[in-house]
Image (cartoon, rainbow, N blue to C red; front, side, top):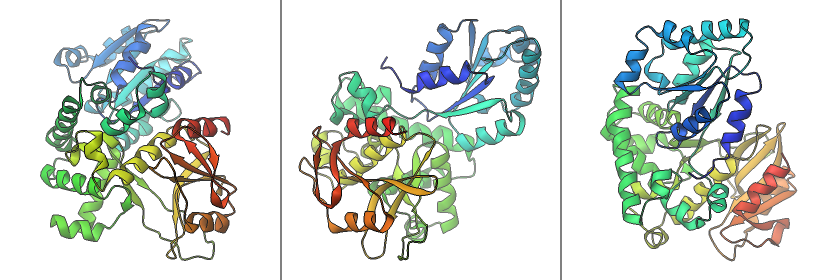
Length: 393
């Protein structure tokens, strides 16, 4: 198993006085593997329940008696969204354990639908739960494991796809993954939503990776209403499959683009939706640059820390920043992404940074050397950019 950077954060939350943690992320991202690893070494012992297994569901026929009997063990409940009625019970059990002197590590809950789980848990577990997002593997994790960065970009960060025996098996896994979401998860979380239409939208978003969201245009292509497109994208975002990147909207005396950009979050899924099996196929497709931009963006957003907020910046005059990180409502770091071994910058990036007063300017590219560019920017590799963000909080 490739070590995941979120493990230390999750362990710290569970041992620092938070009685319950909710680990959110798409299916097959590694949540279960990580949870089992933590359970295997938990000092008070642990029990693991998968609510998709009938035998584990039967253990909860009398959930109150069963879960009460597990104290002081850590109870891991996978696919918790299948039993929302448990949340009210968990609240009383947490309070009961606290009264008995147990201060941490009561429950670890795993799920794949972020908004629904957060709604269910926040109503009953307010002040008792911490939320953590688990994304597919990022480049620093893969680099530490000795795998080539290009393999991660082409195959994406889902472990079974990344570590497949060859590109063909990796692509087949990802295409099966897409199919299973459409055939299984969409009917579960949105029973009235047509899975075939959602699949077409998902593919269209891959074709327009990182493009400005135009709901009216997408709706016309799909034969549905613009509000319906919004609901479909909401579902894909809730399942951690799509990201909306919001524009920087503070008035700087410029006519700013105010429409979000939309990314399919995992680059491997972008390529699977477009039937691109190998690096050669990806490089020969028009999506290559946008795919690499999304790959970099997702990696960086895993490491920016809670104090920074992500945006993009674009004016109607052409000034643009791919990723603008703000702190305390003020622009802090400007990042451009170039899939080139010899990146160059146009005037629009420099003008945008000048408009916002951003001094820390970077161009992330596939190389490893760091060197100066025009407009006060530095070319930097992705691993080094992650380290820079970690060191500066």
